[in-house]
Image (tube, rainbow, N blue to C red; front, side):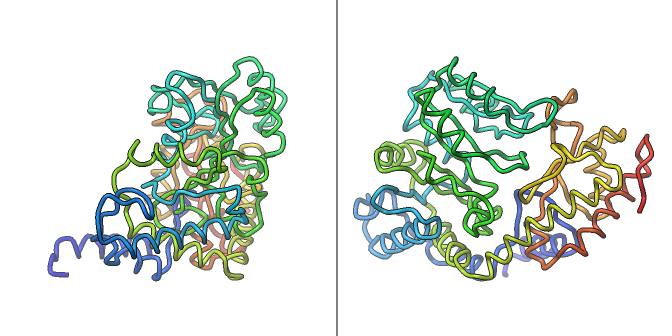
Length: 394
């Protein structure tokens, strides 16, 4: 690069990524092919609108691109083009979710989602987000004893509050969601069911996590977590909702789409359709289960007792170590995690009681169960010196 200052920053970040163990559940490493598409000449083109209905000229290739990526998305998730549409223009997950609400829920009406401190996302109705400012949030939680979703409690709340839209799918919940039960809950409340599969989209694509498409009305997802694509998002919708959602995306919350992002999504979708990706996704889950169990054996409390997916929460404060302290101590030793609130947390989000761990990124780097056991021991050794209670060393 001519810009040596920026080139140096890229070099430094490349070195950092290579020399650390990345256990952040929402991160992954894309392939060189995805990076190539992301840095392609598509970044030069403005394409406000949708295929065949652009506001600028010169978009014949852009139209081909967008339609190709839509076809790949529907095919990967086994969605019939007769009943489903997909919008591949959202810049990221947050505007994708906001666009759904904007298109389908009148301002001031109720949307129902999991509380942030129980594993929900900011855009599922938290008051710090537009989703909690423009719409009236209704929160459900997890059972205090099991730390799992209590579908009977959710049903009772939905019947009482009658939200216009219910969100299932979370950012820090480690168990498989029963989408059939959520469908019945939504039907009982007369609500639209939206599934945010941002975290487990890659697992769904690989067949190692149940598909939400037979039950949901809307499915949103980012493309950069377990799907291993660029930082972007997609909105799948049943045909009766598609026009309103498309208008909410553009011109509702966005301008012209980032065609280079869409091209990179296309590459990632193609990669996810290959047998190697299915093998990868199975290993991601095996690694998460192994890491959680090995930490449990060493005395650390795992929220809900384990995981069915690529992520889980560790209650570090049960051993006298705050989530912030745990995150900082681990990063000093080259292990990257994020501090995270746990269900019924008495502490604050800036210094919560736990940490969130995920195995998508380390699995991309080729790590398996053997490495998970070593990482569990490293984590325990690093935090053991700060623990105020005895942690088992194996």
